[in-house]
View 1 (cartoon, rainbow, N blue to C red):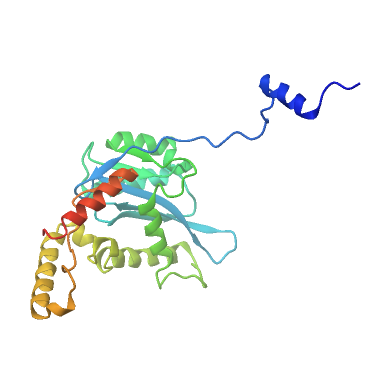
View 2: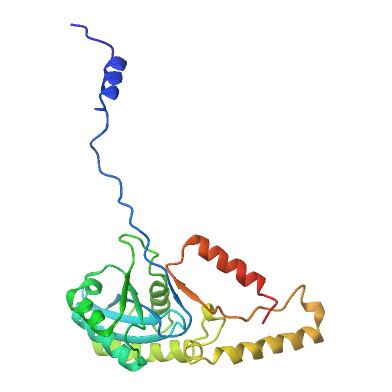
Length: 262
């Protein structure tokens, strides 16, 4: 029995709104995390956990690390056999003691891992008066400061890629030396080649003025070596966490306008 053509059946299905496929739902869009600004050290910290390979296949040590996004200083770290909210809470508390952080002074940013959102951790943050900030689920670049730090960790020349860590004590000994190097010796490219501790302690302002003067003297002696202004040694006065694209563009424009003003 002929009822109608294929196209006719599809037209009827469309009119009755029965042609939608029952496939996978589209990915849920998550609201971007709130924006925060840091104008001095110990206002915004970022932290995360990464694994360190042991010499036993399938067994890892876990490096917990906290950094200040304004100064890039590592303000706290620890290494354990497992990832737990309890270890994380203890580390945050100790870092706040070491840095003398007061109530309602700090924002702490992290991803959405279990140790970050565990009840013990959240209770500790509330006790310390810390505002928690979290990355959006499945968004890989919402915690860029910690991700960049861990890249530096694993690409450091002393990181045992082949031999790996013999014991957890070996890993901790290595981390002590790395943190000292990173905070006190490492000329951070994101800080225009000063150390995180120099930025953290407020030594950067005078250092940058001196660098500017050195460049001005060099240009006055050999102006043919410069086609324009000397290098801008100003460091940003404000560091953003979760800045939107429009804000990032405005920041870049303002920095360009201030290039000639030191």
